[in-house]
Image 1: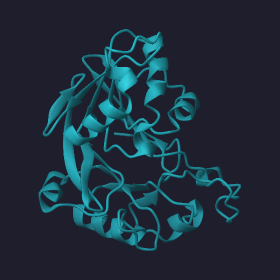
Image 2 (image 1 turned 90 degrees about the vertical axis):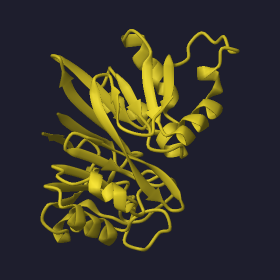
Image 3 (image 1 turned 45 degrees about the vertical axis):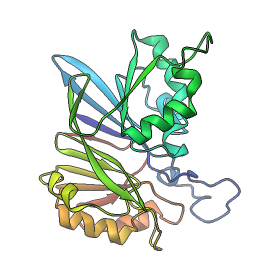
Image 4 (image 1 turned 135 degrees about the vertical axis):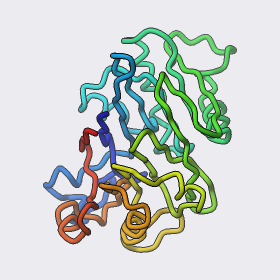
Length: 256
């Protein structure tokens, strides 16, 4: 299994438009962060399957950077704009592959997507070039194109959204806290990818310190922090993070 961080930035991306802070003007390419998204590539019956988690606003840029030309399924964490507004770019994948791309998420997320992108899913429209997708609400473990996927409830402020566990990997972006029942589902991980916005407390995201504490609780072999804001410098933060915990960067790949 290969896991690639397509984007590790918060909703604004880094650099932020108009910002002149040191990190937004940094020459370190690892401080350049597109909106958060993840690619999981695994082999099923001798065929590679590509699972995308969230269609970020920067999907086109990410796909071109990674030479990505096939998406077999999409898993949605929640319906905030930075996680879904790249959905129209899926039509380019439809051009290169046969059939419908299945999309999965919670009932609330799927309902929002169906409403917000009605032109994709409604039979009332007759546009010549729209994504060929089907959206399915899931509320427990399911199979996506032959891959076993377990949704993990996580708190995003007052909202409950999905993280996902696939094998020994868990992706928990936009997380502010973990329900007790989800902690039990996250034991024995080889790789934990966890959101950590900044050091200053935030009502809907973990701080770096809170994410490190959660990592200590879950005790995975490796933790990568994602959904990073423009106050976190890649090099200096990694110097002080505990062993086994690191900041993500766009294009980071891990093979398990």
